[in-house]
Figure 1 (tube, rainbow, N blue to C red):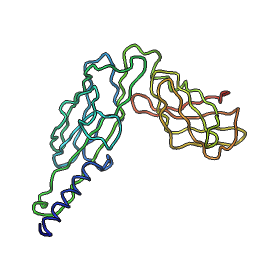
Figure 2: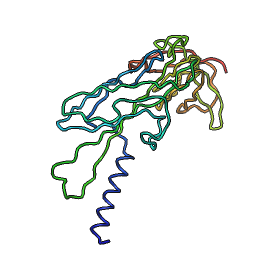
Figure 3: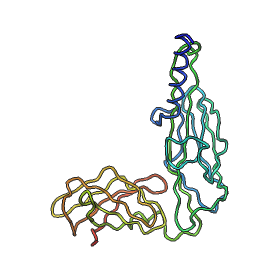
Length: 250
């Protein structure tokens, strides 16, 4: 094997690795309608609209996953089918995908969360033939919530009902949010105001149904028993809502 063969194989391998590993939506030409997908359990299917805003065709592969970006399409057994799983979208055109639940058992008393994945492979440039080049694929992800029929509560307002307390953990003190609802509550940021001081968390986190999540607050180094909580949460439409609450006892 001569040096040119080795270089060609090297470039092909590098291209393959980048296709699998690169995750980005900021420079992808195909956009997805909305920022999250809600699947009501009583529906036969839901749809997702894609739009190619570029002047060149785009090849799209879509699937539902658990959220691990190292896992590719078809490597997990999840009860959802995306149709078509592979499609070509012409320049400045759209495509509607359908997602169907195949019926395998999922919890019926709380939401389940997965991820909608879209891998966009741009076309090869006209000048790339016979040249060494790197082809980049862009992977976008949206949260995908499966919502069983008959859950108690209202997802439009449950974000207002988070209860908060300061608790001690191994790393010090944290602000613990408790979600008693059957819905996932995503909180981008939260702050605690107490004794003329404000402690911030800007990294956020999602509280699972009927569960808790601990938020680290910058500067919080001792127990706090009273104060006002200000936090933002994201509703079904991707809009950010702001709520306030009083700090509760542990």
